Length: 407
Ligand SMILES: [Zn+2]
Image (tube, rainbow, N blue to C red):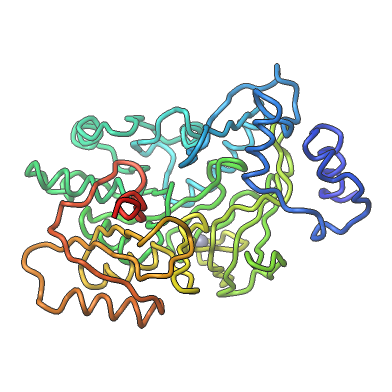
């Protein structure tokens, strides 16, 4: 029996959600099995509190209950057994070792122990053998002291936080390079894989930036980028099966070089909340070239989340791609203010771009033209003084519908 057949059999046995979902589907090839979406898991939670119809282990075997950082509505619970924690730790250790977290290295971690699954990264760093210094989020003074006093060398944080930290230091007369950060292991949002954001962080601190990526419903980390800095290696072998699909047609795509699509995950060992063909909504580009680090398998670069996608007059616009174009002009942070609520936009969205000092008179127009020629989207670019857009110590908000609703 294949791993998949065994997995699907176990799902039917243990999970009421999948028993219903797979009813009437016998002997179908794996690629013909239905996808699972986040919305379905939310509905399952609501239908059978506290942990939903997709709970596949006895409640008394659940050792931790995390929440996912949903932007709307109630928190979505993620339950794990002890074996699930072990699995996450093993995958996380592989992915964070790829990003440069090393045995005995003093490494500062900004992810809180809860409620989000990112807290489980602490276990992964312990497994690697790093000397972890957990400071939590929003604790910048303590973090800076960890570098100044404890001689820390590595920092695990979001790319937004790394940029915020550089500003924070400069405002207080501290030269970011003097902190001694050698390695940024960034995760939680795209950005670490964008050339402009990466270079901004590397330049500010004289450090290397490598990224990791996971997803709450599958594993907090699943991918890690090695020293080649050309995409994240898959780290979930034996625990998670990964597929690439065309997000519109829902059909499988081969992991060929430069292929672009959405990642879909099937957990092979999860006890508490296993998922079958789970739509991640993460869009990636594949790097199938062999890597000098010796890690096998595929690499990906995340280019955005379907959740952030705007469709402007029929053209897909990922806010992170727009940020990349703006960064080439030295601008940013940015904030996109769509003309109205919703993914589909029929008017050019406003793009607020921070610039330092006195901008050249035609800068807004030059940025707008570059966005139009590169992304095939018309926008209204407005320059605003540096430091006027909201800053985040966690994840950057790139799209704000709030203002447009009242316009
Ligand atoms: Zn590599």
